[in-house]
Amino acid sequence: MNAPATISKIFDVNAIRNEFPIFSREIKGRPLIYLDNAATAQKPLRVIDALTGYYENYNANIHRGIHTLAEEATAAFELTRDAVQSFIGAAFREEIIFTKGTTESINLVAYSWGRQNIQAGDEIIISTMEHHSNIVPWQILCEEKKATLKIIPVNDDGELLLNEYKRLLNSKTKLVSIVHVSNALGTVNPVKEMIASAHEVGAVVMLDGAQSAVHLDILVQDLDCDFFACSAHKLYGPTGVGVLYGKRKLLESMPPFQGGGEMIKEVSFHKTTYNDLPYKFEAGTPNIADVIAFRSALQFIQETGKEKIRRHENELLTYAQTELEKIPGLRIIGRANEKVSVVSFVIENAHPQDIGILLDNRGIAVRTGHHCAQPLMDRFCIPGTTRASFAVYNTKFEIDELVKGLHKVVKILT
Amino acid sequence: MNAGLRIEDIEKDITDEFALFDSWDDKYEYIIDLGKRLAPLDKQFKTDDHRVRGCQSSVWLVADFRDGKIFFEADSDAMIVKGLISMLIRVLSGRTPDEIIDARLLFLKDIGMHTHLAQTRSNGLVSMVKQMKHYALAFKLKDPVVSKN
Image (cartoon, rainbow over all chains, first blue to last red; front, side, top):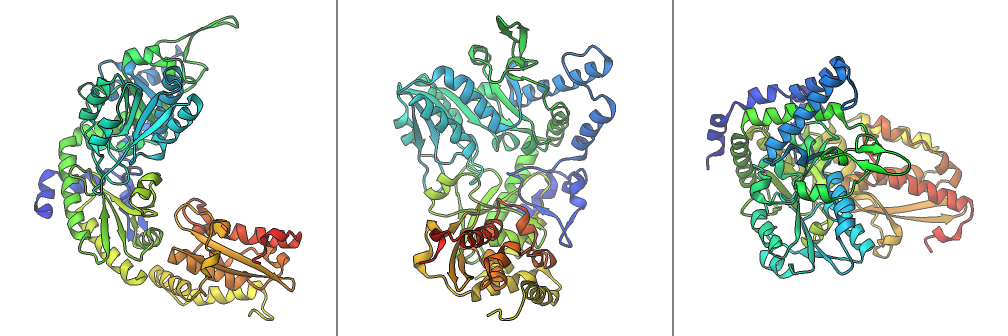
């Protein structure tokens, strides 16, 4: 694939960059090169405008007020729910619950569904490549319920061992909670097949879509996952907003996660009845401004075209992997066949933290460390990696700068 | 080794040395060089007991109390942190507990390294300074558990 020649044919990257005010910033005297998109994406102006627009024009608490501002704010808030429903292909708008992020979405399922359905002796399956937020909630649940956590191993390329997974599935398996795309390696897991296998033994499946939602087409009905979680801030949207999708029947059968305003029908000291979906799971005043602005982020993705974004990112990935491997002592961790635009690597005799600091000196933002996936780092016998992750606004020039920077870093450190 | 010099004097020396560099690359190359020149820490001390927890890099710190003064030795698996440690040792090793407790370490800001103090999660420098001060406090209170021997 000839990356440099084809990039410009997909879309005008410069026009896209112009939508992101942050790219006018300089870091230590150099233009910002932002390659930490798997941690959080930058925000286009329309998202920032939507945020300030809410506060400047129609700030009001939603759902309860009868005045104009409250009606406008409620309408805008609920429009985002419709946009998310369409973005992930959910059957009903009530299946979209707003949370504060993927972590809270997973915890909601662990506390509500988990405490209702997991019993002593049950088994929950996760994988070696989970983010800590898809490990710890299940560890807590298993400890409380005397259930067992089972782990799907990965091969040297950073792919799940599906035969091992199938061997773990049995009638005691009540839940499979797996990451759709690995944050540390970029591996895309064959989740559709895995979900079908889990359903054969009657297990419920939760998908951690924190990394996948921005790169892949998500069709929850086609995947047939029971729960799906993602975060707005990795989708060019604001921080503090997450989504939990759940099949309506499951959500209806689950007890509330938190009690408070919004989530009730009637309250008396004798008995409280709960509100319908989705409000049953949205206690208290939600993050109104950020939820509203999230819709502008989804519009940005849709207008740019997810397919085009993916092609652009894939070309950057291929180019980056080819160029990075030319650096002496550099080893890419995670060589899965199916990957999104994430490159994790180690360099002989160079600590990731030193690499990260020295790249930052050159205006290049990458992530270093264990990426909140310590069990995965242990699997590869490394303390951590340096990770570059690419998004819609990145360019081949920026990858060249990264490679140049790394050559300099190697010279300084080794 | 710091005979006659106050902590502030050594901090000023370091600040003056850094004033010679005009680029960040040069500053960091110098710090890395300081790290490389730091006296190696004996393997027996590289245990969890002496480990100062940082999120990304490991730091091992050993303190020895002799004649009313504390002497530090340290190591890290990351070069820049090791260089920063070597400066801390230059400033704080061979001082009395009170001097260490009172040290404000303003030179870190003057040489532009305070960003490493700002974020507790990313490296061990904050924990390192805290640990040095804990040792000082402990020796001051004559707590026997912190001695190297």
